[in-house]
Image 1 (tube, one colour):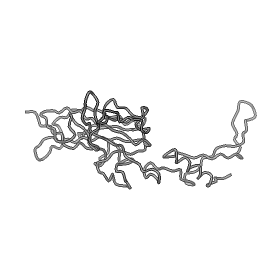
Image 2: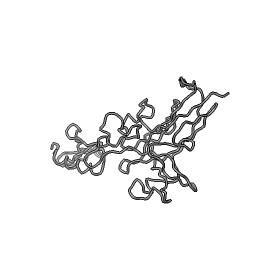
Image 3: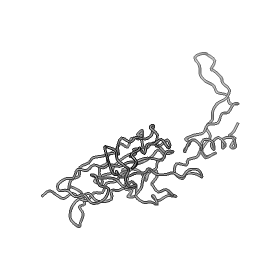
Image 4: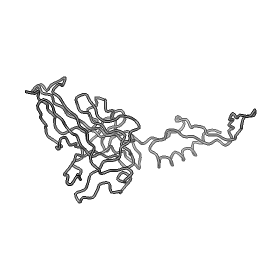
Length: 265
């Protein structure tokens, strides 16, 4: 028989309660005959088979970008590193990253500048895991793997009370999805060899950015209103806007200052 839109539609509605995106839907047709070649002269014959429902017939459902009445997507959260004691660090200001121990202000060096970027980062509990954790250093280089098979646990800090933010209050803070062993950390070295020195002082000015992308395709963005193409009620960017190699100036979280390298004297 043909596709029973009512029955399949009910099934899709149930799937949406479990999955944010369905790749395909198959319907069991008990009257269809399936012929399977066998080693004997007579092939094996079975009654019934699965038929894929064309996506043009019924929408499979995909709430990863626009959400639905029960769920609005949230981009990953990034936070600077706060006060530390005994190797345990609190989470700092949201929407900031820490460079060489500071979360804002210019950093100036002669000849070369070696920096360490640190930050806490986590995805929404329903949109895990993090699939991309990368740093665009602003000098044409990128650190962090872009392999599609990547998955990263949420990296959380500690509360002022000393207890961990990985408190098992939801899946995103459970041991299976969260670790509090320290922030994400990347190291890089800058040189005064940029293609376009700052016209004001002829020095090289760099502004790194960090990009976190979750399993739904969302990443953090530079604007509270999010990237164009919305609605983006919770900010952030989606899909190709999160490509770490793109020139989209709205993707990721920028360091709140500049890294300035002065030619060696």
